[in-house]
Length: 489
Image 1 (cartoon, rainbow, N blue to C red):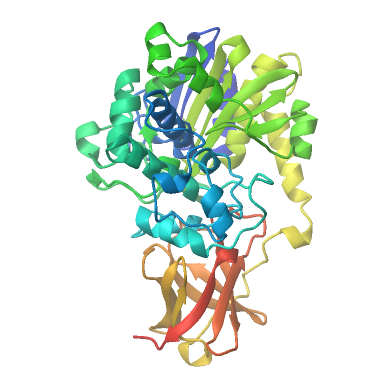
Image 2 (image 1 turned 135 degrees about the vertical axis):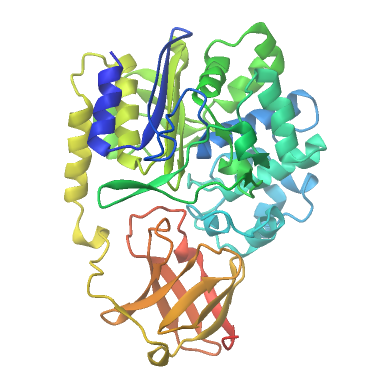
């Protein structure tokens, strides 16, 4: 039943590897793995292969916080400044009224993806203290608690709240309070040894029809700043155990996390606008965010889920609580559309098994939607862009943004290089397209190029924007505002 679905998605999207599991009425009824940990390596993906679960880490972070609430060490309504006195938002009133719960619902006022360039591309040199300090400089995109705009930085702050309340580093608490009690023996967070743990999938990007590994792990995987928002890795076996803990908890698991906190985490706390696609495909009326979980009615059934997205790694975990059923899958390649299609087909197996739409129908629908994008919503053709010679670029120098820090626009051979002091993967070449400058990143995995717009003044300033207006919101170039601070070193 499930094999043809998985195989059709792999064939349509040329995935390097995938691990899939399905739970029906509390029982694991299907597991499958395909492909390799590294394309061409001959190392097969197994149920014990570790994947980056990305933002599926958020539900584990909120479960940790729920544990601390159960233990009386924390309350959802506590002000964040009770635990982190240096915490500041741009608006002092918001700073005073930000509760622990507000860190978790994407309704803080931060613009969508605001400040994410302090987290990705990874690794970089931004610390959690940098993030707490930088938040005060990010201009709000809307009023506090008024709407849903997805962010990641406040989950990093939530991890620091857990550290303060729990009396140990976030990574230590995650192992002690979540992984160990639930028997998630393969899940990893923090610093660990690639070879001692073994069987680790690597991310891939696609070029000329081939899957190529990118940013492969070294022998030691470091703790990263983004761990509470998206830094956990798990295998299929542990992710299915994690899902069963929510669908059919044992008496021991109900002692691990109370029914009160389980309900709190998976209850609607902030409404999410329902897209036209979701209305058409799923007949959804209401969509909301809990604490680390999304939820919606799909064909009249309640579904609780989350997705995970990192460069070259995509995942999804979905629960149908009333059916005690669900599924999880993890992919080690660029797979945004593949995830949408596979998630939809697996969900429909439960909510509308007679709908008659399979992988090809949903994939074709996405292709048609992309083809119908108006010109204003498409990235420009950059084939005619030319590399700018250093002597022809009047904006050379050092620049600083209050939260992102220092960059340089300086000669490097016959080109002008854009380079970040704290984010080493963000270095690229200044080009010109028509009357406008852009930055083309040297790292092929940083695939969302940026407009670069200089502004005369004293001092001169720079702003940036995505070439693709519908590109990944974590490339939050629009939130940057650089001022010139000096000449090239």
